[in-house]
Image (cartoon, rainbow, N blue to C red):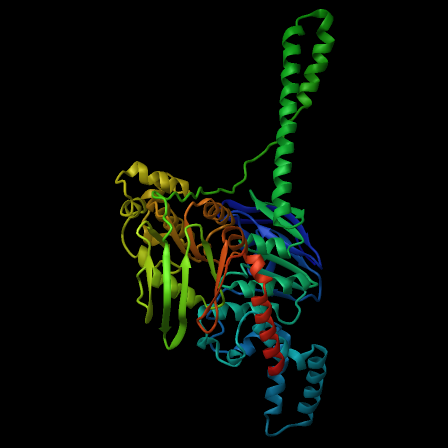
Length: 544
């Protein structure tokens, strides 16, 4: 168990948390939610001991091991992948290294033998002989190929390092597991594996995530941070949302009844306070009036943008034809003879573990890259707007937000442009901020403003939920569902894919595709996925 007791944390004069009391108990998974800036990551750091409280303390059950998902992707570049994962259990890793050092001695003494015997006993008690196989299971589950398990961390790309650090946090059955955005940069298969792992995990988990489907799947409780307080709810994210809305509704209705009662009492007092025969009743009602207190209902600190893509032109029957496209990137054939036809009602989710393949296809379809082979053709009634995964070049300039968006606006009017920025929560002086200094989330909201103002009838999104908070993801999801045009997109958010897509195209590791008119959940249960799982399982068994 881990608990916060009267915890206050101040940044300057501002209290981010004040007098927080909460217990996290064994066998439960707690989703820690709140608006951007509410202090979710800060609270995890306080729980882990990385930050000291201003007042109050954190208590952990004696003898329990706490594990944290680390965010520094370069910290372990000097270590092999396997060692990095096993470091998740620091004591076990120390034993392994001390054993190796003793056995490597040329002058092995009696004292060394006694010490080695002690270490071997502790090593066996900690299930050390299965450490590498357990680490390999975690790595494979998260999509790190066996061929990389003994490579140096510096050899891995950014997404692979994220997965290794997650495996490190999960390794060795920690008593308390703190996870800050564990689904970031994970493909949908890896997220599904993590969901099952956490569902079956028997100890304490506290997780911050913007993925609503993930929170609904794994969480038994929800801890909501709002206005420096943490309110605990039994249930997942959807249960929290329904419960919190119900509580607000009930409190508003209770206040309304109290206001009506106050009005009646005030009218009686006003009419009869000067009447001698009614003076006792008037005095009694004055006392009753003084006792009535309205509930202080603070509006939530959460702010939802309004995302609404409106095509200027209705799309025709001929949308997009892709024929035999192939492309090799850095010696890897990521697309191999890919062909498909897009209809005017299609909302297609591109899935699969190869992120580069999806990004490459989108870049080809938007004219940023040329295919090695094959062709594509957009219909004459179509217009496209593209959300790139890497937006670095888009914001490498000295424009203000307003001037930047004005450059893409068909109407050269500042009031018109600021209307779109206002929908994305850029208010007042935000319009004069330089785009180069914006945060990741602000840049994403700028790109979505650009797509809204374009009036395009074909939208292409390459991982649009990265850097967005829960509220913005919800707004984007609703905007994508409402859109009366064609969408081609890749996204790690399960709920966005499930509620938006009516067709799934999976790009396989060999660069070919599976194309199905279906929802995502139905696709996951399909024969194609069953065959893939069978192949994966049999391959893993052969390797074992």
